[in-house]
Length: 249
Image 1 (cartoon, rainbow, N blue to C red):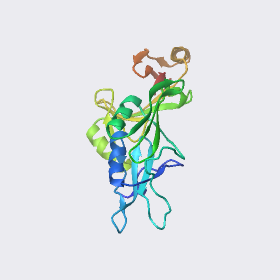
Image 2: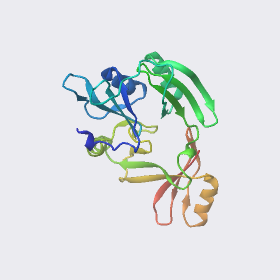
Image 3: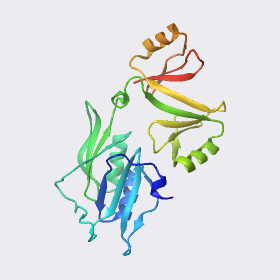
Image 4: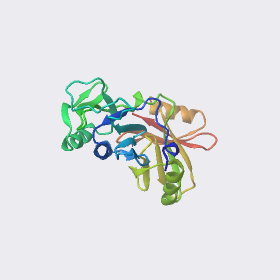
């Protein structure tokens, strides 16, 4: 598959120079739970001239430095840096541990701050990383916007094969039976519940109980509040019969 057929990267994408690109690709995929986007582009002398790794909904590009036409060289394990790479992860401690076990140097141990749990490390290729797990999802999704989309399907294997081929989705097990998270998108999931296919929208609200009261007062059906590890959840139905979910951190 060519790069143009894959998920479009963000407006600004890190492009790293590394001394050993093959090893770096394996390292970033393993430590950051990433996935390879296509095959690396090889130069005539065998060096990797371009490679892409998907990490969440972002893209990390890298190449081996030292080419005459591109005056970029890989760092040599520096102690001072001109930039840092910020990466948002679900579990700072787990990623930090994997990184250290894989040869990274610890600069700051995991700790809680007002904006989340953080840690800092330098990878074996001389690049400095800031790990961050945002503890409150509300900082990402404004109130009233769709926070999560669940594709309801009859046959999960068939649906995974279809969306994998058409949209390059990759899947990891979800938190419910026969549920799957789209690994290269943070807010899309797949659920095979045996019912009618469709799409379930989940909207973030500031006060879920107040919103449920408003739903009942305006002709909708308000569900019961469920406590989940990620917050409060309730399934609702609008006056037209459309099912949707509410979410509160």
